[in-house]
Length: 155
Image (tube, rainbow, N blue to C red; front, side):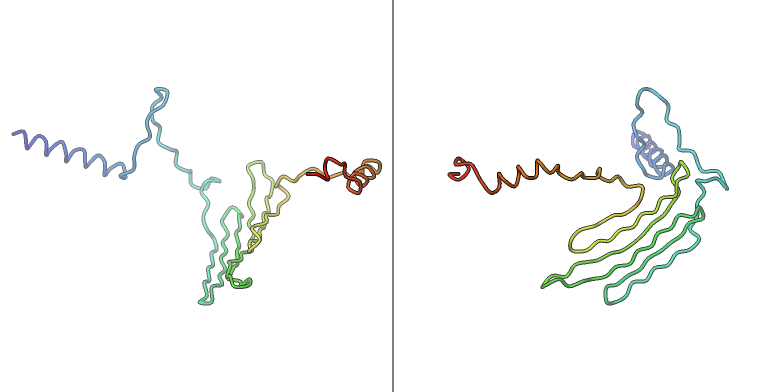
């Protein structure tokens, strides 16, 4: 009898787990009930589809990929291998654009190679402009460089 009860309980637990998609349920925090995520409404901004997609991967290691979605977002990237000295490195160039929640059109471009990656876009933060060193301070720095102190010479 006990075996049948245990087997029944195991089957019940397995059935419940399968219904939940076999993904863990996050623990409740603060005693609030778990609310399933809302599904996007048909025709809403959240209902975005891919309207165009292309991919090409060549045997020589070059590739290109691009897509566009129904909300106007785009992505395009090309790349390949480059030999620098005795080393091979991957290169990539690409761009992406989308509309931010505030309605601003975002354009991002990038280049990646053996020197790293460089991103460009009007929305990215930039350092403040550097001002020229005042002439009097520059003269002082030049004089210090030409006339090191005796203590600096011994170090």
